[in-house]
Length: 557
Image (cartoon, rainbow, N blue to C red; front, top):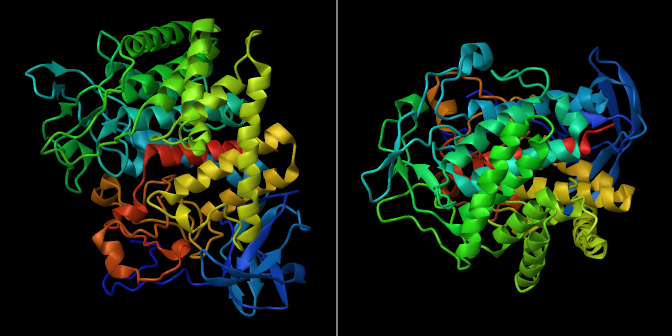
């Protein structure tokens, strides 16, 4: 497929065809701007569309970079702020093109594309050509699901396909939806102006909230009358690489879990507050769902675990406990209602979290969600909130931010990553680190943290050891051959835009990756743009949502 740099026929692992790596979307004027080079040079030139040299500066030596194995040189163009489209040239080599300008001019399109990606992942409906263009398809998975182990069928139509497969999972969906809701809550001006042209688009509510509603309505369908929440709805095995409307296997509604129940409680409570002034009826529906889920949790204080039954090979989204989920649920319920019983529960679960690894308190994934609870409490607005404890939570985030900023300073490419961070879905880790840095900057006012947050976007969009933009449709050299069933089966050479690839993975968890990538390859280079390499090049809704939140936090003027 187009823009693929790995020759599958010969299993040859190569990099992009240049040695000057820049953010292929670009750089915001007035901020630090640099490209990474893998060869020495005395000077670099900035060249405009006409081929004219508009700026020259000396190249500096950053030194050996552990995660890439590269001896890195820096082309710093911070002093140049004239809006336009450029390339960096040195010693006969050239970077990909990029833009310099305002935040919206540089990142507006990629932010729209990453948000519009959720529309392309919708389940239970067709994608109309008016909104999906060449990626349109008929309705899919619009049949009732069979409750596993019973003869009862339930309507759980809707929501987003989770990843490269067609499953829908509550814990993953709640995490992704929460990140989009926080993007709106923390950056309302940015998200209100990010229009995605979806069927529901209309004045009075931003598209991000209309898209989230599609997922929230499905999440509430996954709730039983007693408040408990089914863990997932999938077929028994993953479909082959076919279009979603061709996946006709039986859909199963799998057993409840307290993790799914707590996550639904939390995200519905969060959403109830967000929608309160925009759609009061929907807000009340969300609040009622959250209250039912919380009541179930109160009546069932023990962890109800989910594990795939025999014969099921779809995503498990298993857990090692539910304390962080209950922490998040209690925090969001307190933030929504101000009721002290939720505050008391939140402080109880906070104490329980202290017995677990410290990262869980700031984690923003699907497996560990404590960071959402921490944000819920920090940004809650009630007179009886413990401001001293809220500051302690801010300090926990800021302390992690400074630790991450030190990583940025040590990496020639500016990634807040070390070797251990290059696992399956490393771009999620990259985005989460950027979010922590951006939040830390807002809590402390430290410009060093703000700059470090910006660098994570630059790494994601091309300033990395392979010179690849990990967002489809963004840049001259971007991922295209994703592990995403409709992207492979639709017969369209161009990939669906706005999809965030999982990224480099030193663990090489699939056979094709192990066959192509040589042992000892540096972690940042353990990547192949190949749909068979699911442990490298899959997509998920919670990777995309994390990238949306990071970009919203960093691209403001």
